[in-house]
Amino acid sequence: MAPTRTTPGFSLRSSRPTSRRLFSRPRAQIATTGVAVLLLAACGGGDDDGGGSDGDSITFWTPHSTPQRMAGQEAAAEAFTEETGIEVEVVGLAAEDQNQSLVTGAASGDVPDVILTAPDQVANWNQQGLLDGEAAQQVVDNLDPATFSESALDLVTVDDQLLAAPSDGWGQLFYYRTDLFEEAGLSEPQTLEDLASAAEELNTDGRAGIVLGTQPGDPFTNQTLESLLVGNGCQLVDDAGEIALEEPACIQGLELYQRLAEASVSGGQDVESTRAAYLAGDAAIVNWGAHLLDEIAGLDENFPVSCEECADNPQYLAENTGVVSALAPPEGKPAGYGLTLSYSIPRGSNTEGAVQFAEYMLSEGYLESLDVAAEGRVPMRAGTPDSPTEYADAWADLELGAEQESGTAISEVYDEQTIQTLVDGANTFERWGFGTEHAGLAGALYSQNTLVQDIGPLFDGADPAQVAATMAEAAEAVQQDLN
Image (cartoon, rainbow, N blue to C red; front, top):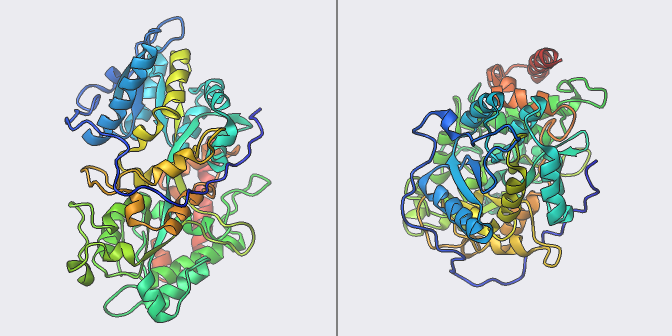
């Protein structure tokens, strides 16, 4: 049984130093290990004794595989080796490659020792019997469950068995132009209805009311769909285990999604087009992940701000952008969509070394491991028993930006309220099916983008009830296949 958990307070301290770097990342461009070699070579050296690696070494798979991100993780791993004597091979491997390699490696007894994974991977691997839940539970117990976000723990718990130790996550946020809202006399949106009404009012010939994912079959649209419907109280499965996508909350959510799309740009919108529109000042609202924060602040040379006002002030958008992380449904508590990453330990790994490494990366090495693209890596462990908000407080002083050193801390650009919204959002993450007995179904639907394959008619004016029926039919077919 998973232990009883108390959600820690995620309040932030009232003052912070300005313009300081908590860590000095190695500047050397570290090659992405495991990408240019056969996938099987990325597996640890399993043996008949059940150890993925020998007692003095472990293999760690991470999806953060760009040179800068690898550098930060390599530095944390080297510090762990200095402290414990356990060597760590850090392997950069995308999620889809992790999935293929773990299944293949498990068949031969050759598995990594620790993997940084998303909830859908945890759900799928658990169904295949590949994860050591007792080892993950040991990590969390040793660090104190009360120091972790309860929602993050729930997302990787099935049948009261914790399957991974939560690390960090990002929310699918609603960014809105506070200057435009003020001019129109609009308040901050609290509900999906509020968003639709505001988008309709702010939709003009020169600026879209909102931009959001509408491209059928696209992963970004999949995230958009779930974030909107979760925020309206729609559930994937009801208490009886039946697909619930034709319930009133879901149909109403699709009606509002349809209204939002009508106040958006015509044609299928994706992750690239929506980002470009908001950065250009061509949209009053955008539904996007937390990774947009550095780009809104004008700190990403690959995606520069180009709004009219930004020519004189590159941080104009950041100064005039508000953030909503969770929507209040007609019934129930506010909920937001978020993707978390957790440390999983496969069966057959070097369990002792893996547990030590995961604990280290969630304590002494925690902030250094988060200190690349920190805006998209909100800590799911707020602090320690003695200092409950230590990591949440320090996170706000980490540097904005993914692939270059901006020298600008999150707290230098965004005010206390915005930062608090981002951190509090970690406690409202809700995902369809994950953390329940239906996690396997949720993982399959998510990985295949099943529910948005045929969503196109919704944006062409189809009856939302009929679209809901089509989605429910597709989900039921996957559910039957799994059973």
